[in-house]
Image (tube, rainbow, N blue to C red; front, top):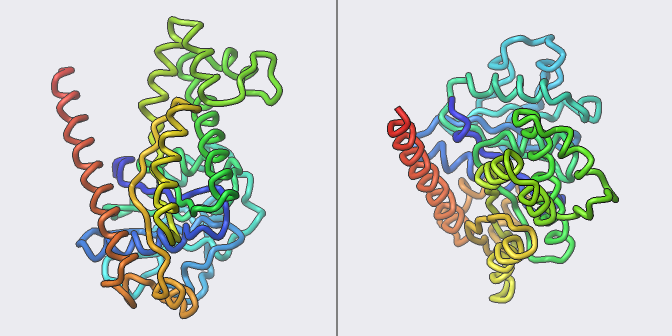
Length: 314
């Protein structure tokens, strides 16, 4: 399975609706005829199994990481939705909060080899290495934000930490690890505090450093979905964040759309049933369907472009 078929849903702050978005996106993809795996990696707070009406899992990610289970397909749990399976992190807790990067890559490599068209990963809150690395290793990196100051602030922090983390990991391939490492340290002597500072610093070095950072900019294109929107002023938060990221971070943030706050969402959460099944024709689900369709279209266009470039390179 190609990397583009993994969607990671993050955001930095808890309570913004990441699980709501991840779960319903998974259902929408399955209803469109795709084979989908929903991976609940909100370690310590995983609850998608309850929301999907399946029994509490007896095995989890820790069993695969610890090699007690060698075949990751053993973790798959069928759901009531045709075409949708679940990998639950409900059995796992803080004991696997600090996975090695090689373990994360092994896990995602195993996921890609499963018989599925799309894998949707529901990430936990915060900016831990676990969360950020799973976010970066996905083909589509989707953030959920609500129009409140703390959520917006945490989103900017999540973007900054994710970009810095990507630069650190990829610098080894370009033999720039010794250049990048001291610059990324907190309170460094190079006055590099934001992605924009880092981009400017590496561009000034020129040569391979410039080539490297330009490549990182093409690889880092997170998307945001604005949730719990009540007013027209709330609607402007998404475009404003995109503009701010470009101006102050020099990063391209893609605003995919917003989901209106609606009584149907509250009922869905209280009743622990997917909105895609209980209120499929409500305003929030229609908005999410549009967002899902736009992401699929974007990925299709990107795949066509990459195939064309590959053919031209031959």
